[in-house]
Image (tube, rainbow, N blue to C red; front, side, top):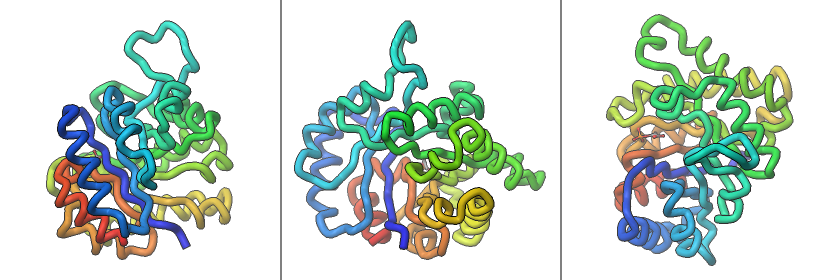
Length: 249
Ligand code: PEP
């Protein structure tokens, strides 16, 4: 039985006051949630979030990382720096990183490998654009993105990973995938991993992301291969996010 997870991706939003408010509300409202909750604030607020989350079971994650250990990479942040601030999870391959910052499948794979090697959990985001879905390329795109990581980091590294199916056309648009559409891709991803390791496929958490909200969360999380959600916009609204966490149980 896979444990449900809900991950908040705040993207480049918030300020110190908002961080206090959102984490205060989360600590208050989600005491009885049995799902695993993880919050990914902007990197400059990790220290503040780490302090606020002491004594809770809420995990801390980063939105991005550089694959190199250290060195002349101005503006970048290494895995060991994230570790110092209590990050247990790191998003890799978010579609905004792929499309706005030109991250390739191979860049994503190198980041994933660096995160795993440091003992943290990568959250690998995969997903097709609207055009790719319309021309029938969804399966090919998500499997290409997945295989790039499997080929670089090895299938065993997935015993420590989370995958998030995030159709690009659903992110921040309000056009959520139907539970059936999402389930179909989640099943495909799990079946693909099954070919390499049944054990890893069975325990691999596969989250859905793309306009998850309090109205659609329960029906998405009810699907057999959907193990929770990666939530962007709605995670910035404490009431909406609490409702989504409650839907996860
Ligand atoms: C995301 O950024 O990962 C995301 C799923 O955003 P939203 O929930 O706003 O669609």
